[in-house]
Length: 451
Image (cartoon, rainbow, N blue to C red):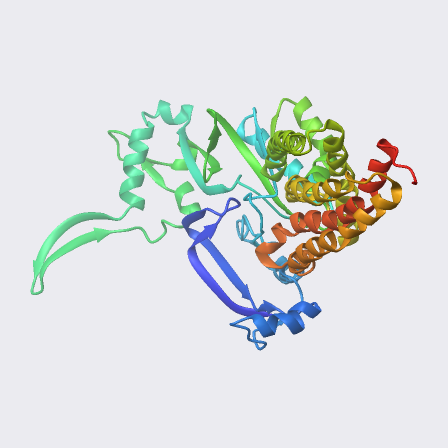
């Protein structure tokens, strides 16, 4: 299943897929073989028309997420390994690159608290997301940097005449490589440098002897200074001047939508807000809210323009409304299509519905243009039958063109699959509406009777 494994030392990609450089970092990239054909189209049709088809490369049976779960289990002992000073790896994660128009399906930012409280809130959010089925690649940007040791002179040290500057001067001479002289020999200039062999041993710092000012007496550093260990974050993220920490995650779209995930973790979000945290929902949910507003405006404008065009063509409000009435009814076909395909209704689905409105009206316009000439029910049926073949042909050819995207979407094309499902199944249902519903509604409204 593995095509290649590449290890990079001194760099890693963080939760935002940004490169982070450091001597204590590493990143392993695992490339997978191409997925083996899993449907008749990829198995029989694609090899005929593909110019670069190589069956020897299509050998992977499982998807990347299943393989990632196995990798996590293999590396679990390594991720939990403990060394002399605690865990060997402070951050160890296995992620799968996702597809979509946003960097992260789930992104939640917390602010309004100090660093310690923000870290606690981030961990609570991650724990809540981990309990939701369909959420994976959970990560955060609260990456801790290297541990730092700060020395603060205590009262006893001040009484002995010591201060931070004096202690720093003596430590610098002992722990840093310094040049203490020069001399010449047969080879030329020789520089004399001195470096402590115990400089990397933390215990040597505590036992370091500090020389008292204007004296030859020494005292242990641990007696005159307090040792304070701190650990800051690798990066400090700010938004509008406020420090924030974010949690990220990816979704299995076949199991959950971003809205369903937000509903599942709503109790945790409400609890954080009540404790003074400011919660900002980003990621796909934020884009969905923005797209909903834009799609609502676009749909309203589109329907209005379609209505104006129909009134201009028919010179009749009633005929225009008959054609226009198929638009809301066609949504039933969209819902049915998503149910058959096992897909959730997403933003691409709504975009497909807006585009579907114009396609549906075309066949309805043709049907009404013919049947409005009827003077009785028999003539109406005859005129409607004359439109059967043209409407069926236009609908069938359109659906056939969308079939590959509806049933055999893969890779980045999966983003467009819900849109194709909305169009394909919507057109099929619109065909039924235009062939049956529109003539019947016309006959009822205009009271077309038998001759």
